[in-house]
Length: 266
Ligand code: DGL
Image (cartoon, rainbow, N blue to C red; front, side, top):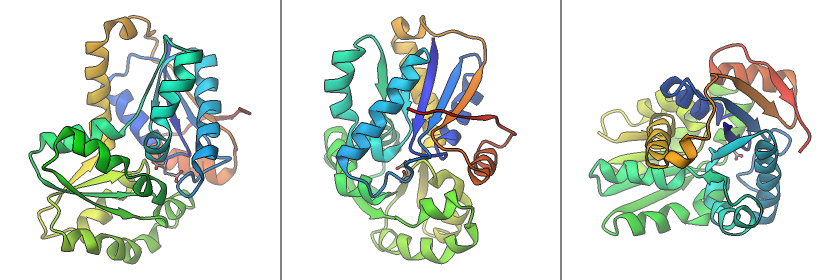
C-alpha cells in the first residue's frame, strides 16, 4: 500500500518531495485539488466535502496513510474527518495532519514567542493557537493571514511578492517573534523572500518541508502496524482535479523535475 499526499493545490508537492528525499523507498501518490484551489477563503462545509472526496480517491488507489499537507484543511476539518468519516468508513487507514507536528517542532526550539503566517481560513480557525496551548501554554502565537500569497505563487507572479510580504510581516516583526511558522503549503517556496524581510531580526523559520519528513518517519517507526503495510517500489504518481498548462508548469517548478500530471474526477 502507498502513502498519499493531499493538498488543495500544488504547494503540497514540496512536502511530498521532501518526504521522498528522506524515504525514497516508499510508493507515493499526490492529489492536488486544482479544480477548487484556493481553499483559504472557502466555507468549512466546502472544505470538508472536497477533502473527503480527495482522501477517498487516494484510499481507492490503495493508500494506507494520507498526509493532509494542506494547512487550511488540516486546521479546519481534519479532526471532524478523523473522528466521524474515517472512523465509520476506513477505520484501519490513517489521515495525518500538519498542524500538530509543526507546533511540536516550534516547541522543540524552546522559543516562547511564535509567529504564524497562513491563509485566512487557517488563521480564523484559531486551531494553531488552540493546539499550541495544549503543547505549551507559556508559548504565545501572533497570527497573520496572508490571502494574496497563494494566488501569486499559483499564477507564477513572484515579482509582486516582496512589497505584499513586507506588509504582512510587519506586525510579526513588531511582536518580536523568535520563530515564524510558514503555515501554508506554498510558503516554503518564498523562504528566500521571507528571510530577506526578516534580515537582522534573528527570527528563525519553521518550514514544513523540513519538518514533516522527519515527523512522518518518526510516526512510521512508532506505528509498525502501519509501516508494515507499505510497499517499497519507489513509485510516484501525480493526480490533479483540473489540468492546464499553467498547472503543469507550476507543478514542475515546485517539484523541481518534469512531472506527468494525470487529471482525475473525484
Ligand atoms: N494548501 C493551502 C494551505 O496550506 C494553501 C492554498 C489554499 O488556500 O488552498 O493552507
